[in-house]
Each structure stands twice: as C-alpha cells, then as structure tokens.
Length: 236
Ligand code: NAD
Image (tube, rainbow, N blue to C red; front, side, top):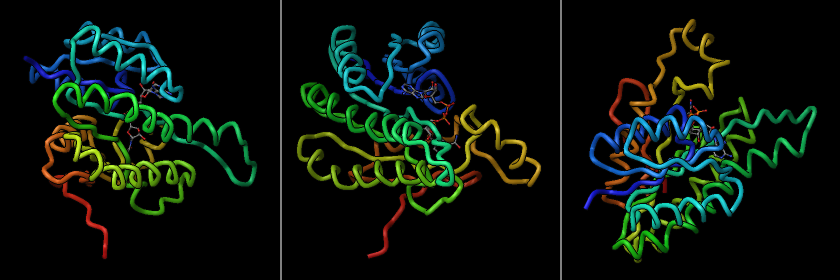
C-alpha cells in the first residue's frame, strides 16, 4: 500500500518540490492551494488530486482530509506548508493585513493538525511536518508579524510532540533560511548581489522528507545553504 500525503501550499515553491519528491518515491498526494489552477497543473504531473482551498478556514482542512480518505482511504504524511509574509508596518498598522497573516500561517496549521490527526490515527499513525522558518527561532526584524507567526507554530510543534506521539503521530518542523521561491522574489536580487547563498525549494523538500522520519518527536530541522539540516536545540 503506497503512502498518502497531504500538502498545503502545494502549487508553488517548497510545497510543489515536496509533492514532486514524495510522488517520485511512490506517494499519492492531496495538493491543497488557494491557487486551484496551479494545484490542478501539478496534480497532472505528479500522482495526486488537487483541492482549491484557503487554509485559513477550518473547512479547508476538513475538506482536504475528507478528500484523502475518500480518494485514497488513508493518510500517512501531512505537510502544513502554506504561508505568506505579512507586510505589516507598525507605523501604519493595518489590522486586516495582520489577521490575514495569522489566519494563513497560524490558523492554517492549527486547523490542519486538528483535521488530520483522527485520520492519521485511523491509518495506524503517521507524521506531520510544519514549514516554520529560521524566523521561528530568531527575532528576524524584517517582518515582525511573520516572525511572530513562525514562533507560534514552533511553539505548537514543541508542545504537541509528546501528546501526539502517544497516539502514534509524530510532529516536527523545518526551519529554512532564505529559499529561492516566488514568496521572496522581491528580495532575491538584493540577496544575490550581496553574494548571500540561497536554498532551493528542493533543498528544503529533502529536509521535509527527513523530518517526516525524524526519530524524536518535536524535531525542528534547521535548513541552511551548503549544510546538512541539523536539529535545533533550545538552551536549558
Ligand atoms: P510560495 O509563495 O512559492 O508558495 C506558497 C504557496 O502557498 C503558494 O502556492 C500559495 O498560493 C499558497 N498559499 C498561500 N496562502 C494560502 C492559503 N491561505 N491557502 C492555501 N494556500 C495558500 O512560497 P514558499 O517559499 O514555497 O513558502 C512555503 C512556506 O515556506 C511558507 O510557510 C513560508 O513561510 C515558508 N518559508 C519560506 C522561506 C523562503 O525564503 N521562501 C523561508 C522560510 C520559510
């Protein structure tokens, strides 16, 4: 029986690279993205089914998990990856912009975990990996609300790891540095001109796959260019 994976933010960047990688290894994928056309295109290329949905709604995660069960009868791996930068400027604060970032980056992960755990358990156990960020571990000041949302999901992963493990579900996160995807297209030239090395989406996808199989629950894999991913260790 082949592995069934659910990936959010699957139409682009890191999520698409994970879908291609898992599919090449024989997995069947549920590809969730607010960009339904992009998800459909990828579903034709990999072994998968697309769902156009906004992960900031609870319904999106419920629908995605129901689709996995209906189409494939099980769920083994869940990559909660959809995310956006916030662009919130505290000098001209926009509450809607703030809530949007929290909705996608935090609610999307919370609803995803809540919807997936029952089916992962019924499937005999499985693993969830969240795409956090280095900004979830350090005080990156380029986008403080983005940094806050990534700290929030790192906290959730750490706190949920032991209780979920008792049910046979592992949860962990990847914490990548700057990765060359459409999300950061505006800053790309600046980084390249400064000689700053960039990760590729495929680098991060490889780390996501190893995070699925990490032995310790709650593993936070730090992903940086030119180095093997390493588990982050909090002091104390
Ligand atoms: P990307 O923009 O290429 O891909 C993100 C995908 O998420 C897009 O297909 C987009 O349509 C989808 N998406 C956004 N909001 C959504 C929503 N509400 N519902 C469903 N889908 C939605 O960006 P990426 O760099 O691949 O980002 C993936 C994840 O990696 C994000 O969580 C991001 O914060 C994180 N990350 C990125 C970098 C980086 O430098 N690119 C670094 C660290 C962490």
